[in-house]
Image (cartoon, rainbow, N blue to C red; front, side, top):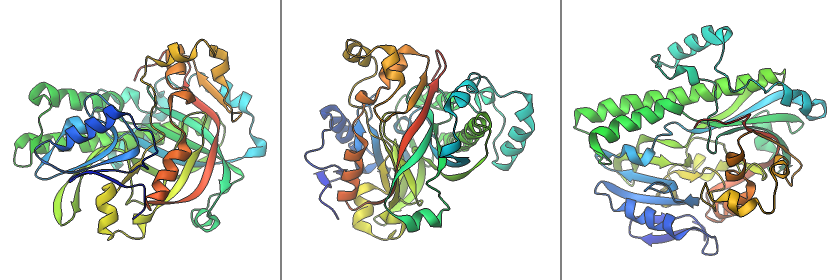
Length: 392
């Protein structure tokens, strides 16, 4: 096990070098959450940052209980990477940008048959929130066209039919209002208390949670297809992983429940860890993919990895920090030469690259911890947040 693994307490681990900056409040929240009665182990990732009572960028393992508040309202939030059929030398960004004008509108009737078929295939009961299917939402959610910048493992690229000359599409979104409704229902009934496995409400919550996860997966799929359609191309899904959910897991001989709160799975094959909109993303292979029985490594990270770069600044503080130096127009292009679509001024500043840690610092900590092997680095080409004011 590598050097970037810190044992904070008997049951709390932090995956970060001692020189990596992590806000003190986030570590405090990690330790406090680990003191919940049913929590056996907690692991903070290199992108750990404070949340509303519970840290983001962490995993928690419990026995005989689950804590819906640890998962939060973004149930099923995750990342999907698609390889488009467009070669980079044929990309016309101006045309793509123009065709994204209506991309946030609800899907029209032409999509209805596909939505119904996919809902049946994924065992998703129609809900009052289905009008949001195919939409990104606000906050840190996005769709981003990317290009491979550096290849570190050509064999892994070839094994997945990845072509560095083709444009890639990364989608980050979740279950939108459906996930919010599931959490709100639980909070109204139980506040932040957990649910014991023998409570009837346990099974009821889990069924709603699992549907929200499937809904989020379908949502990312439909978002990707909308953007492919706008770019007048097709593509295929390389990976789709959830980083906000609870699932059954056996760890250290204990059958329990693994809660991921902004943590990418380290036991489901290749994943992508994105930076901010002005930074690189990394395609990585978790070491536990080939070594699932490495108990020491699994215990250190709870089968989880970082899910992004991690915030440095709170939302709401960013405009005051940046507006004296950057005008709105300055933030619509990045230092890497990519373009940004974001019509919401507050969000444009809140999600500025300066508000996030550098992606390579996160990746270096994961490599030093012995958790991943880097396959490739991707740089942004066009990042879409919203055309105007948007809802989360």
